[in-house]
Picture (spheres, rainbow over the protein chains, first blue to last red):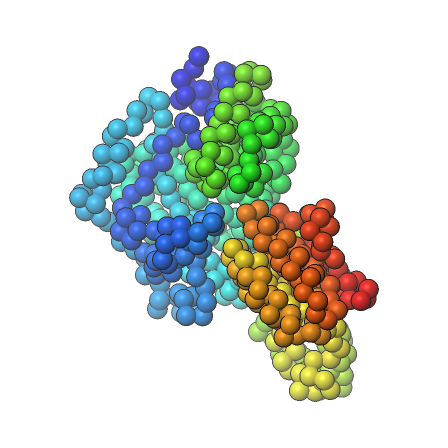
Length: 328
Length: 211
């Protein structure tokens, strides 16, 4: 039996894994001082102002935090004047700030697991956190130059922080969030997406590679099938969060030589108050049989190894073990 | 190109910085305000259809709606009733526990563009607040509920049930949102289901025709 890492590497090189890579088992996600400099909003807790000045709330029962975007709280009210109001957070933290994360990193067995810093929000998400999503989406048409400038500024922050992250955590993987679509469509047309985000992401992901990262995992729990060629060009190795609306089997057929699809098990179907092991097993088996074994990692589409409802994530893990025994 | 066609193009392409001038030119050239409004409403219908066919994306919808709004500001003083043909009131909101607003906002924009008076309740709206608003507006024609999370589908069901049982006026209930299906809409007793913002207008018009 292959080790967890050996099995993942066999999957990555389209070789001979002896079972499915089981959700996030191959990677340990690490936080870093950005997350502790300003503690993030917690479920049911009070709103917090994040390091970019965006006020974030996390009401109880929601799957994740939301920016507050009433008139009072929108950071960038006029994108042509973004330079007056947007100030990137520090990218340099003290050794003391890094110490707990370095300690956590050093305890990870790299023979068995990849080590990946957790980066969120992504560049697109950051723009609409700052502007409010509708204003942001219209700004791509109305003020494209200002949007390019703002995106370049956010990208510079990511590039600078990558240096510090890699110096301290020495990651061999990256787990980077940026939701690029709804459940049914991308937010932007592929052409517009490429115009604004392809080069920035190529720069960011190449910088991490230059600093020793071997594996780029990008999370977008959305429809984004039409952006897969762009993902490949950016250097993404694994698209995590791929929802069933993307037609995963078709994507594997078309792009399975160039990118791994991690997901297929929609959070909305298995992460609910009345989940059962039987129903989860059926959903997982259906997904795995449709997707096959090549270039696919069955996983809850959630952007981390967790679920909203206790036990739902672990039920998927158990179901994948059962299905693996049948299919390998 | 006729001035009316230019107005249509300004809406379709979302030319927010130019449309006011073009609408004014159309008026100066003798076009009737109602005629300009009809042209813009028709164009927004086409925009909604293109969105339903996945030919355009959310930014194109938003920018077209904004262009129409700016064009409307130019002709509004000349419209006899203030905003041309009225289809009636529509109360819309995202149900309690759900903070997603963009889908609901797109539906509100499209419905408003088609001639409804829209009362937008925002997001995370408790059932009782919806009912209070319905009681304040007994002439409401359509009440539209949005829910984007599977976790808030019970709230969607509760909102529909409360609206259907509130014994006020004569209106139809429309639902939509990513996890909602036609089957689920039927199951919870909604009168109509809209798959997206483009089709919401068609469904809303069909619903009021059946009142």
